Length: 406
Image: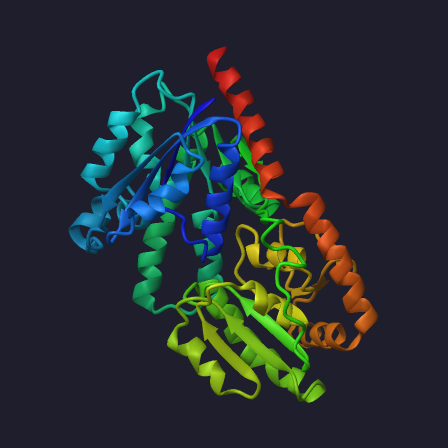
C-alpha cells in the first residue's frame, strides 16, 4: 500500500499519551508499507533532528510550518461559520496548499489522518482517495463528559452548546464520508453508533505499548520502602486535573487514616498551579515533566487512575501493566481495555471503595504480586504496538480492495 499519513503535530518526543499512540501506529504501518508522513509543526518545532526520527521508517517526511490563528469572536465570524470552533482553529491556507499538492488522484491508496481537525483539508479529495480518521478521542463525547463533570460559567456553557451543535453535524458528515473511523475503545464506538449514526464505519483499536521499552526489567530501581502510589500523565489535561481534584478532595484523607505513611507521586509535564499546590500535602511529590517515566513506575507499589472523564483508553494503564506496576482505576479510566477486576486490575468508582482498593493493594502483598504478574501477561499478549499496527494495516488493505471494486 501507498499511504499518506497526516498529523496536526509531529509526535516526538513521546511525552504525551496521544504522541505514544500516533507515533507507534505510524511506525507500525510503515513496517510493511510505503508511508509518506506530513505533520503540522508550530514554533519552529520541525527541526532536522526531529525529521530524522521519522525519516528512519517513512518514505517521505514533510513538516508544514503552522501557527494557530486567533480564536474567532462569536459575532459575526464564529456564529456564522459552520465549522466547530476547535476545527476552524486548525485551518490555514498554506497547509491546504501543501496537502493539495500531494493529494493528486492515483498517488496514494489511502489517507490516514489524526483527529477530525484535519478533515476539511481532506474532504475535497475524498472522491478519489479514501480517508481514515484515527481518533484519540471522540470530540463530542469528550466535551459532553467534560460539561457533565466540570463547572462552567453561564457564558462558557452557552459557547460550549453552540460548539456541541456544530460538532454533532460535523460528526454526521464524518460518519458519511470517511472510509473508517478508528477509535480507542468500545465506549467510543457505542457513542458514535447511538448518538451520531448507526451506519458509521467504526473500528476499535485499543492503545498499545512498546513492550521493549516498558519491560519489567527496563527500570532497575527497587520499589520505594514506603507504600507509594503514582499518578502519571500530562498535568495540564483537564481529565487528569479533575481526577486529582476528586482524589484529593474525597479520597486522600481516607487513605491517610488507613496508611499514614503513604506517598503519592504526581508525574507529568506542565503541571497547573492547582496541581503544584498538592505538593504541600503530606507525602505528596509533584515532579513535573521527567526525561524517563520508567523509574517512577518501578518506584511505585501501585498506579492510581481516578479518572471521571472518559473517551479513548488510557496509555498510562497499559504502560503500567507492561512494566509491572499494578493499577487501581475507575471503570471509566480502564474502559476499552477488557481488564478483569481482581485479576489484572483493581476497579472502584466511589471514594470509599477507591480508597479501600488502594489500601488493599498496598497491604495485601500476595494479591499485589498476582495482579502484577497477570498484568504483565495481559500487556504482552494483547497490547504490543507492532501487532496492533499490522492488524490495522490488514484492515486498510481490505478497505482499499473494496474501494477499487466499487
